[in-house]
Amino acid sequence: MIITVWADGGLDLGGRKTRCALGSGGVVNATEKREGDGATPAGNWPLRRLLYRADRLARPVTGLETGALAPEDGWCDAPESPDYNRPVTFPFAASAEHLWREDGLYDLIVVLGHNDSPVVRGAGSAIFLHVARDDYGPTQGCVALAKTDLLALIARASPGDALRVLRENAPA
Image (cartoon, rainbow, N blue to C red; front, side, top):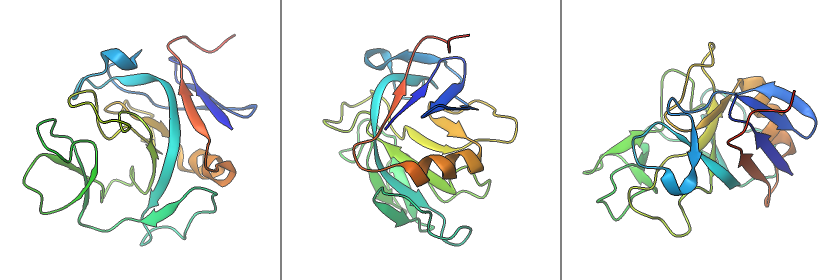
């Protein structure tokens, strides 16, 4: 399955259209993506695995590899670190994003295959598919959906599926 995302915040899940939030920096070509720019990278990003808050949700139904988050889980966003764009455990000496959040945005995280094979330092880290804010406010470069839409998406997902982010707007 290919899930299509348009630059205007539309998402097509196999004929089911929904809204999504994108990065505050808009959508950029993957070769232009830089750490901290707030942009969502255009391209085809494999759905690598699902992480979830087991203290808030039952294990979601999905064909993706699934793991429960722990309070000490993080994701390295320090380009100078050998762990850049990789999961880490706190305490951690370099800069890293905390995956255990109180706001619910990371209750469900689909890790996308952006800048991971191989990792290019400074080309963007922690690009996820996750839960959107109620107002669909911008992300730091991720794609975010309403929790119900994200649960519907992951219920249909399986290994080999991908998120295709386009730089053009959805057709009228």
